[in-house]
Length: 68
Image 1: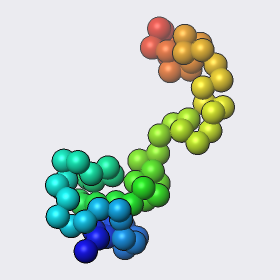
Image 2 (image 1 turned 180 degrees about the horizontal axis):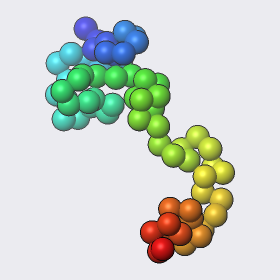
Image 3 (image 1 turned 120 degrees about the vertical axis):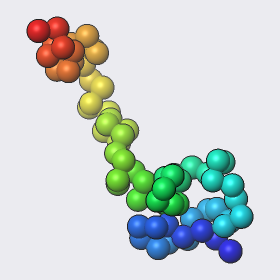
């Protein structure tokens, strides 16, 4: 029996007997998410848009604010 995503209800790739320590997209205290729901809830900046990495880190807006 496959584990279901706690957000959308779709079956995930993991059996219910798979230890949570070896699962991807498992949220402790909440449960198993599918890959799509995980990245919807926890987006990774620049993961789908390479424009985020178009400038060197030393010129980034975040570091400019930290220097002041």
